Image 1 (tube, rainbow, N blue to C red):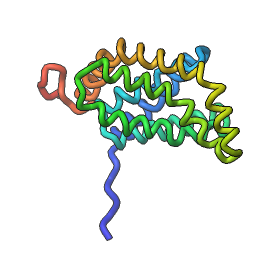
Image 2 (image 1 turned 90 degrees about the vertical axis):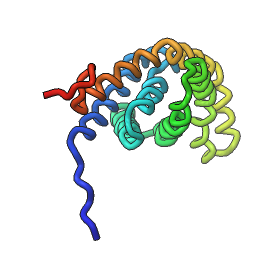
Image 3 (image 1 turned 180 degrees about the vertical axis):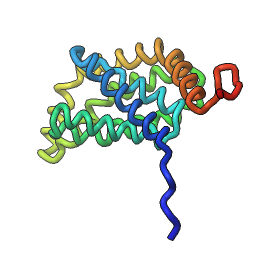
Image 4 (image 1 turned 135 degrees about the horizontal axis):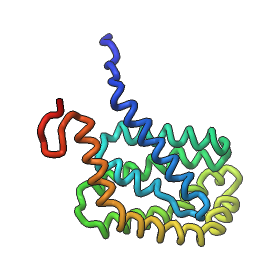
Length: 179
């Protein structure tokens, strides 16, 4: 049996910071119904950071959400909706079209309510359907918010995160090694 790989503190700290940014972004816009930056941030994180770090940040974010707001039925859906979005975001790494990314983020916002209704199937299909249908107006707002924030903020956020990632790896902005 070989020993477990040694974990470097840097990726753990970066993962924690990514999760903290997700939580702060979510809390800062929580007064607006279904307008959030988590979808955009995860799309950006997936473009810049390794999948393991992004999924780690999602897990920490989910745990913090449960601690802050309680581990109710709503929390169960967070365990799958954000990882699903991260996996879908992997496919968007290859596109250079901001419009394609914005449409995908908007589409995910539109589908969010249906995904969130899945735990309610435990109470019967009627409960899941009622939950989903009652949230459709919020899903439309979610769609519009995701579309606009992604269209406007994706490129500058990815540039900034990429710059920070390179600097953290010991490479200066101009490509020279940092002392």
